[in-house]
Length: 275
Image (cartoon, rainbow, N blue to C red; front, top):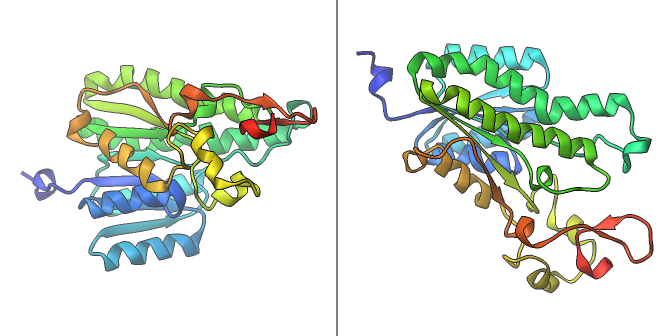
């Protein structure tokens, strides 16, 4: 038997794995003893994550590039082949709401296309590229990152919401398709994550942080480790009978809150003091 077949270390691929939620996911798997392949467009952040992981005794390979581009997917495939020739866990983490106008009527087809690349298409291309290794071994785990906005209306981001609903639908259908092959597929749906992309100060916009206790059931914004822990669970044997689901990791916001028209009549908010 090949030594790789009996090694307890898994090979884990994390896209957007340098900062924020993705950075926490990468570091969590490395800390748990897995071999990590980190893909990120930010070379400086990726190299920093690599050094931190290696210094802590972890195993990390970096692929720098835009995962929405086919050449980056090709480089990722080559990194897998050059490494241990296996993929045990794939985390499709990349996503962004920012390349959009505030209202659909003012948006353009080019913006829809970029949102499609960032939020849905790369989930297809990366999964399609790495799935053969899982199929060959007859096991594997895929965890996609969607958003709570896939399950409620979010004014000003209709296209982003639609593509993430597609991520969760893809997750469900692919889980059914791949279950007989020993591969599980799940997703998480984050909300209100205090990260570089969505810092707490930006979300608060000068409001009193003490008000969070009345706005959010959990009483606080999420931190990256809140999300990485759920991803690690979904990739673990403890979740062996869970597949096809999107797990909200949102501090209760999906259960409790909605969007409100601002009192001044212009725009929308999910913070009740502005309604």
